[in-house]
Every structure is written in structure tokens, then in C-alpha cells.
Length: 281
Image (cartoon, rainbow, N blue to C red):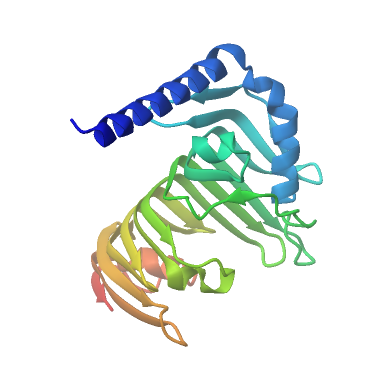
């Protein structure tokens, strides 16, 4: 082996050893829970809401650096907006050791519950005071995972109630080629799997929703999209083109042998028709 090769191998081995020593030091000598108050304050300032971690914080290094938070609450003016049983953040170690911005490359949320409310005056129960915009880099974020997620939206202005339950999301290979919020959907790419056991809007119920999605250069494809509606299995695909000045949508969907009586019940109270029907668009 050449001298250069030996030097490279020695340097790599030395770096690995130093990182291992740093990891062991953090595991055995640093109690991450002593930083809980500081973490809560930073998160509260960043999100513009009160963040409280009731569970313990944990740190791990396999297969990569990760921080785990238990029983996380997000409240706005004393009202709970979000609760997560467990949050797991995948972090890049080198930027943290160099005291740079926190680089998050993956987020995993388990037992997520979001409760959004719109009051009679049209005000929402979130984002009522300005966030600080603390230094947390999300351009490195490549994976987001949700499991056992629930969303409840109550609109006291219209009287509508929307609820989704037992939802999951597995988003991978995410890339951001721009930072402008207005161009986000035009510059993001990803692959994703989404599922929900049930989605309800007042008396209208859709169940067993499963969606595969892929986005690249402003074109988002949802294919296939499957769900159960009016006791029938529906299947289709949706393509959204956001690359131009105006968005374009292409929808291909069919619902065969559904109960037409259940459809009319969502529109009128009296009985209009009964039997089976096919629908496609």
C-alpha cells in the first residue's frame, strides 16, 4: 500500500475513533435531560407556541445520531394544539460539534394528535404570535414518518367537523432545491406512502385510504389512490402539474357498484333512490 493510502486509512481510523469517543462520552457522562428546559425554550421560540416535554429525552448513535423526546405538547395560550407520544429526530453530528445550525435529516412521530379549531370570528387556535425563526436547517431533511396519527378540525363558524384517524405517512428521498416558500412545491421531490383508516367530514365517511405519491420538479403524481366509499372500493390516480404559471390537474377515478342510497343520504334527508351504481371521472 502506498504512503498516501496509509495516511488516508490512518486519518479515517483516527476520525472514527474520535467520533466513537465523543459518542461514548455523550452516552455515559452527559445527561441530556439537563438541557430539557433550554430545548423547550428554543422550540417554543421557533414554533411560536408553548412547547413542553413531559417525558424523558434520550440520545442514540445507531444507525445514526438521534434524539428521542417523549410526551411532547404544543400549546397556544393554554390550549393544546398538538400532542406527540414520541418524537425521534435524526441529526448530523459534525455540524453540532462545530456549533453550527442543527441539521435534521429525519423526523419520526408516533401517536400524533393535532386539534385545530376555528372560532366563530374566523380565528384559528395556532400561530397567534410570531415565531423567532431560530437556526434549524431543514434543507437536509430527507425522511418524515408518522404513525397512529389523528387530526381533528372543528369549524365553529360553519359548524363543520373534520376528523381523520389511524393515519400513517412514510416520506422518503425528499430533496429541496430552493428555499422560497412560494416555490416549495415546484422545487421539492419525494416519494411517499400514505394511509388512513377513516376520514370523516360530518356524516360523510371515507375509509381504508391508501395513496402512493411521487413528486419531481413541480409534478406530483398520486398513483394509485384506493379507498372505500358508500360500501364500494374506489381506485384512481391524480396528477398535479405545478411547474407552470397555473396549476394543472388530471384525475382518473372510478367507483363501481356503490350504494346510491348512501350517497343521497349525504345530500338530502328523504329517500330518493336505492340500488347499485357505477361512477367514473
